[in-house]
Image 1 (cartoon, rainbow, N blue to C red):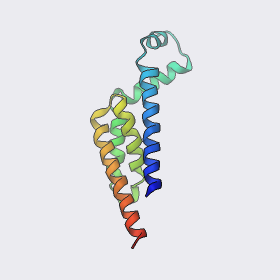
Image 2: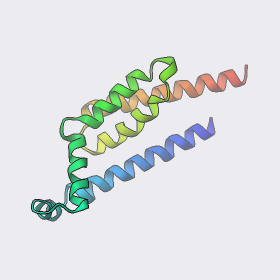
Image 3: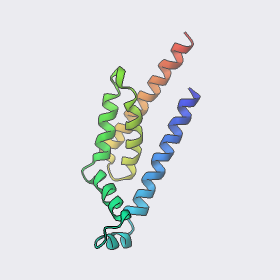
Image 4: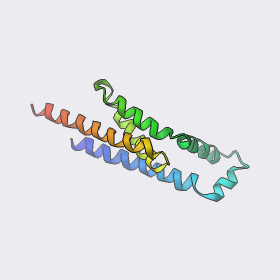
Length: 122
């Protein structure tokens, strides 16, 4: 149980850190946007890919769909994808579906941990 909480916190912190770096380091700097308008440097390509992930709420949709599929017993591991994508989606402008996906993923992870904990003590 403690390991699962640790993994939850670390994975959430990593997703949050990467999303914040992408938002404030790649997407929002106006100088980088202007420089990338006439350049095909690797960081400009990376910037375009990051922008494409939230252009049509894609991160939020992935979080929500993964979390919904995680409700099925054999697909519980997808809750982790929903958790990470949901956190990233909340930072990267995909908050509509990402909020629901993040909460649902967290509930599935907590429920799975609870069942595992109860089974170990039965």
